[in-house]
Image (cartoon, rainbow over all chains, first blue to last red; front, side, top):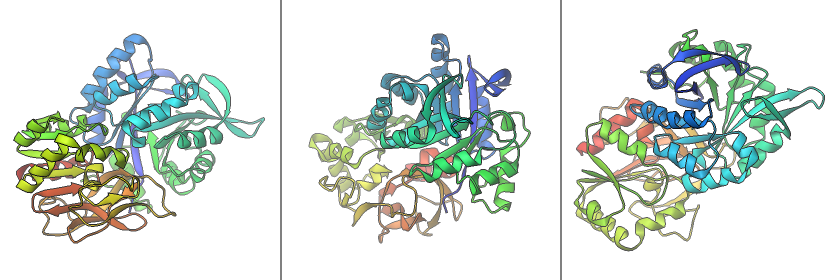
Length: 255
Length: 196
């Protein structure tokens, strides 16, 4: 049976892993290469590295970080953050990433999805979407630039378009839940998942094992991503997977 | 030296790194002369089946065909494995190698496609590739088309229906999943190939 994936996310700034609450208040959590390997050993099904510095100097550091983190890592490895063109995507893949996550750049230039998919295959393109609930319109709206700028675009409409243009997976982050440890947004996740053929990775809000059970069962997520709860050892991936398996969620258990 | 065949279909860095991690020298190449000299050949590849046209064309195609006839150890990964079958519904006009019988098909409706993630294998005990692997290992897949279960299938997987996850015929091997991204189990499989 296809298992549900547990993905460890490394938010990287200037070559160091950081994690904030609601996309702000960053604090240092360590070396990306070391953390990536530690998560893989603990049973992570995949590693996602998001560069949130997105400055020119940060970019050069990123390729070096990807190279270092990719060495000795033998599980799928996704890299995102500030990738705006096919040559930039190619450089990151060349450095050792399997998949590219694109967010703001895909909104600005949707053809980028197709460009990367045509060159490297759809499986290499993860469209990351930061969603915030809009109470007035009772829908979810796409926010860009690290969750700082609303676009007025409807999340469901955008994700359908991304799939049509060749996205292989969707990384769906709830800005409302991110960093709160209060659980994933299952309503959002289930809406998106039912609307799509491609897999959905739920993100934002993980704080306890029960939250993962909910997002897989009620949210119909194919994978769930978390960062801070793993870095600080609040919940090791090994223990998390054991409790999810005990709750009947199909899991790949580490040896 | 292991030749990793570069035919413009996706990411080859991770395959090279995994082989080097195991202590085997590997080079990414599309040069027929280097492929002919190599001890073993890996044909990786992701993307559209049409890309495999390059594997049958001109000097590269002739070199690969010769090495297969000579019985050199060859491993096809993902698209590289599908190319060992007769054809694929993804690009029906593209003629593949046809060493294994049958055509690759898309998954039935009712399951999400592509099939992405870690799935469990049913192994045949006489497999060379899976020597030393756990009896029901998990490996990482990402594909939209599958190859049928045939007499040479040594590992099958279920996703809407049973399909070929690995095939073996003497020195010719194919895996639908990505051993270079399947953790310790994947490294065991690659090492077995390198020692076959």
